[in-house]
Length: 420
RNA sequence: GGAAGGGUGGCCGAGUGGCUAAAGGCAGCAGACUGUAAAUCUGCCGGACUCAGUCCUACGUAGGUUCGAAUCCUACCCCUUCCA
Image 1: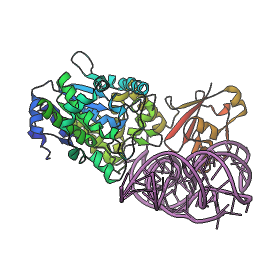
Image 2: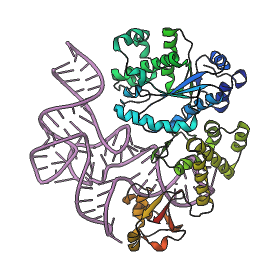
Image 3: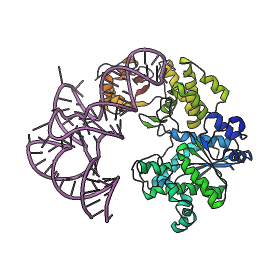
Image 4: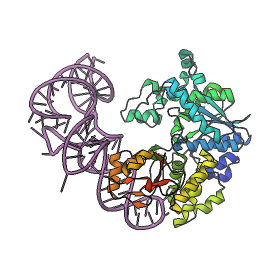
């Protein structure tokens, strides 16, 4: 599959996909381009409901849908309430843990909150649908006869999601084997219900998407399209969106605005341009200017990157607050609101509270033992003064600035200690 | 149903009676160098406790042998391969 030159595509949407680096693979690009040219194209992207929040790995396909809406299309966000009960075998050696219906519904409700900020759900706007609406009610024999007959086992065995499992001699249950059929069926059903003709997703979904396109042609004689974005790794090869604490979640109850902003602020130099194109909506000439900054100057670009993404995902107030906290903390060495805070009872403070226990309570380290190790290694500071005594205590006298003390682990992790 | 092999810390993977909280690698955290970057070098990397120590938890699960078990025995569960 050759990637067309940006100049050769006519539609705004595809041009953006190509120029900004979202485009990885597509089925029949010319026909898709033409279909987009007619305007009002309906496209969907599917989401697992295995967790109660999306993370940055979901952001890329979601941004594609956002651009689609900006370019006059209609996004459908498909929650996999039904398919989550099956488990997508793509890219894993082990069967996913199965969730209860209640857990899935609760997850979907939480995930929705992230979409509210990213999409216009007004009349004729984006739609959020749940494939449990049709999958739960499927009748086995009719489904097999209508849909199952279009799938040959021979072909199913050639798909990566299946083949890799088998090649690696890992078990694949019949339950999971059905996943690709159901996802293909989703596409046809969305076409029938909403006239949806395009499915987007990460490149790991290519096989599933192609199946849907094929099924649409066979079962309904419809021309459907697929478009995938690359799976992102950082320039040094790490998977995107993993931190020590786990995934980089989009919901703020899973990851604070401050930590979210910091994640992007610490982007590697080599990734700045790419990420600005993918995760912000700044104009390309502005991005070119930021990307060209050399040496320490590129830090300016990283701050803009962090603030822009945080604006999109967490809202403008959260973005500005995080940027301001960072400015005061890192550039003025001052104590700033917005850092994680531990509250200590006055009585406790009178006796003094050990620094190591506060590090643990603030969530800067996982255990007291780790906190003590870090102190021994000279990584801990209280109000910017190195702490050398493993059993050093914080007392009321240390709450110097505005009733708070600043506790730091390394150069990047800071927390405030306050009396409650 | 039969035979063989296997299940070890977040992951990979050594270990076949004490020297094992368990080699090595990856991932992670910190220090140095820098720019809140990368690369590199160094240290740390189950938990509790004012800690050169003591105790608790951990080698699929449950028992047993032994002064002592990840290591030996028994039963069970799960996985893989081959045979039927």
